[in-house]
Image (cartoon, rainbow, N blue to C red; front, side, top):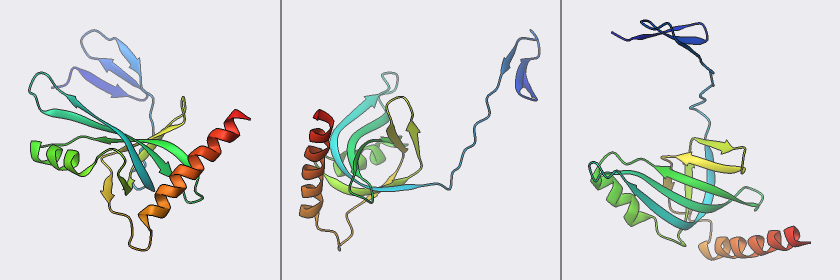
Length: 148
Protein backbone atom coordinates (compact mmCIF):
# COMPACT_ATOMS: atom_id res chain seq x y z
CA UNK A 1 0.00 0.00 0.00
CA UNK A 2 1.25 3.46 -0.89
CA UNK A 3 2.13 5.87 1.90
CA UNK A 4 1.20 8.84 -0.31
CA UNK A 5 -2.11 9.92 -1.75
CA UNK A 6 -2.93 12.44 -4.46
CA UNK A 7 -5.70 14.90 -3.57
CA UNK A 8 -6.38 17.68 -6.06
CA UNK A 9 -3.00 19.22 -6.82
CA UNK A 10 -1.22 17.93 -3.69
CA UNK A 11 0.55 14.71 -2.74
CA UNK A 12 -0.01 13.97 0.95
CA UNK A 13 2.06 11.53 3.03
CA UNK A 14 -0.53 9.49 4.96
CA UNK A 15 1.51 9.04 8.15
CA UNK A 16 3.19 12.44 8.52
CA UNK A 17 0.65 14.65 6.76
CA UNK A 18 3.48 16.38 4.88
CA UNK A 19 2.34 17.53 1.45
CA UNK A 20 3.82 18.69 -1.84
CA UNK A 21 2.32 20.67 -4.68
CA UNK A 22 2.06 18.82 -7.96
CA UNK A 23 2.55 20.60 -11.26
CA UNK A 24 0.58 18.88 -13.96
CA UNK A 25 2.20 18.96 -17.37
CA UNK A 26 0.58 17.69 -20.53
CA UNK A 27 2.27 14.84 -22.35
CA UNK A 28 1.53 14.92 -26.06
CA UNK A 29 2.82 11.55 -27.16
CA UNK A 30 1.50 11.92 -30.71
CA UNK A 31 3.67 14.96 -31.57
CA UNK A 32 6.85 14.15 -33.47
CA UNK A 33 9.76 15.97 -35.04
CA UNK A 34 11.56 14.76 -38.15
CA UNK A 35 14.94 16.22 -39.09
CA UNK A 36 18.14 15.51 -40.96
CA UNK A 37 21.02 15.39 -38.48
CA UNK A 38 24.80 15.41 -38.59
CA UNK A 39 26.41 13.66 -35.62
CA UNK A 40 29.02 15.70 -33.76
CA UNK A 41 29.69 13.63 -30.64
CA UNK A 42 28.47 10.46 -28.94
CA UNK A 43 28.74 9.91 -25.21
CA UNK A 44 27.96 6.65 -23.43
CA UNK A 45 27.01 6.91 -19.75
CA UNK A 46 27.43 3.66 -17.83
CA UNK A 47 25.76 2.72 -14.58
CA UNK A 48 28.72 1.65 -12.41
CA UNK A 49 26.46 -0.62 -10.34
CA UNK A 50 25.67 -3.12 -13.09
CA UNK A 51 27.86 -2.05 -16.03
CA UNK A 52 24.78 -1.84 -18.26
CA UNK A 53 24.65 1.29 -20.38
CA UNK A 54 21.90 3.47 -19.02
CA UNK A 55 22.07 6.26 -21.59
CA UNK A 56 23.61 7.14 -24.94
CA UNK A 57 23.71 10.88 -25.65
CA UNK A 58 24.30 11.93 -29.26
CA UNK A 59 25.00 15.63 -29.89
CA UNK A 60 24.02 16.71 -33.39
CA UNK A 61 23.35 19.63 -35.65
CA UNK A 62 20.08 19.41 -37.55
CA UNK A 63 18.52 20.99 -40.61
CA UNK A 64 14.94 22.19 -40.52
CA UNK A 65 12.72 22.36 -43.59
CA UNK A 66 14.11 25.82 -44.50
CA UNK A 67 17.77 24.86 -44.22
CA UNK A 68 18.32 26.55 -40.86
CA UNK A 69 20.66 24.73 -38.51
CA UNK A 70 19.91 24.05 -34.86
CA UNK A 71 21.37 21.92 -32.06
CA UNK A 72 19.66 18.69 -31.11
CA UNK A 73 20.51 15.93 -28.64
CA UNK A 74 19.37 12.38 -29.23
CA UNK A 75 18.93 10.44 -26.00
CA UNK A 76 18.82 6.65 -26.32
CA UNK A 77 17.91 4.44 -23.37
CA UNK A 78 18.76 0.92 -24.56
CA UNK A 79 17.09 -1.92 -22.73
CA UNK A 80 19.61 -4.60 -23.66
CA UNK A 81 23.32 -4.85 -24.37
CA UNK A 82 22.49 -5.91 -27.93
CA UNK A 83 20.38 -2.80 -28.47
CA UNK A 84 23.21 -0.65 -27.05
CA UNK A 85 25.76 -2.29 -29.36
CA UNK A 86 23.52 -1.73 -32.38
CA UNK A 87 23.06 1.97 -31.64
CA UNK A 88 26.77 2.50 -30.98
CA UNK A 89 27.68 0.66 -34.21
CA UNK A 90 25.12 2.62 -36.26
CA UNK A 91 25.86 6.15 -35.04
CA UNK A 92 29.33 7.58 -35.60
CA UNK A 93 30.73 11.10 -35.59
CA UNK A 94 30.12 12.96 -38.87
CA UNK A 95 27.33 10.53 -39.93
CA UNK A 96 24.23 12.03 -41.54
CA UNK A 97 20.81 10.44 -41.25
CA UNK A 98 17.14 11.20 -40.64
CA UNK A 99 15.62 11.06 -37.16
CA UNK A 100 12.01 11.05 -36.03
CA UNK A 101 10.63 11.00 -32.52
CA UNK A 102 9.06 12.75 -29.58
CA UNK A 103 10.92 15.82 -28.41
CA UNK A 104 11.06 18.75 -26.05
CA UNK A 105 12.67 22.17 -26.26
CA UNK A 106 14.88 23.33 -23.39
CA UNK A 107 13.95 26.98 -23.06
CA UNK A 108 17.18 27.85 -21.21
CA UNK A 109 19.50 27.16 -24.16
CA UNK A 110 16.91 26.56 -26.91
CA UNK A 111 18.28 23.07 -27.43
CA UNK A 112 15.99 20.31 -28.65
CA UNK A 113 16.09 16.84 -27.10
CA UNK A 114 14.65 13.72 -28.73
CA UNK A 115 14.08 10.59 -26.68
CA UNK A 116 14.69 7.17 -28.24
CA UNK A 117 14.17 8.48 -31.77
CA UNK A 118 13.94 6.25 -34.78
CA UNK A 119 16.85 6.82 -37.14
CA UNK A 120 17.25 5.77 -40.75
CA UNK A 121 19.25 6.61 -43.88
CA UNK A 122 18.46 9.66 -45.97
CA UNK A 123 15.72 9.30 -48.55
CA UNK A 124 17.10 8.14 -51.93
CA UNK A 125 15.96 11.44 -53.48
CA UNK A 126 18.25 13.41 -51.11
CA UNK A 127 21.94 13.44 -51.97
CA UNK A 128 24.22 13.15 -48.93
CA UNK A 129 26.85 15.37 -50.60
CA UNK A 130 24.24 18.12 -50.97
CA UNK A 131 23.22 17.80 -47.32
CA UNK A 132 26.86 18.01 -46.22
CA UNK A 133 27.26 21.16 -48.32
CA UNK A 134 24.16 22.66 -46.68
CA UNK A 135 25.56 21.96 -43.22
CA UNK A 136 28.87 23.52 -44.20
CA UNK A 137 27.50 26.64 -45.94
CA UNK A 138 24.68 27.36 -43.55
CA UNK A 139 26.85 26.85 -40.46
CA UNK A 140 29.37 29.35 -41.79
CA UNK A 141 26.66 31.74 -42.95
CA UNK A 142 25.00 31.82 -39.53
CA UNK A 143 28.36 32.26 -37.77
CA UNK A 144 29.06 35.30 -39.97
CA UNK A 145 25.64 36.77 -39.15
CA UNK A 146 26.31 36.34 -35.43
CA UNK A 147 29.70 38.06 -35.64
CA UNK A 148 28.34 41.15 -37.49
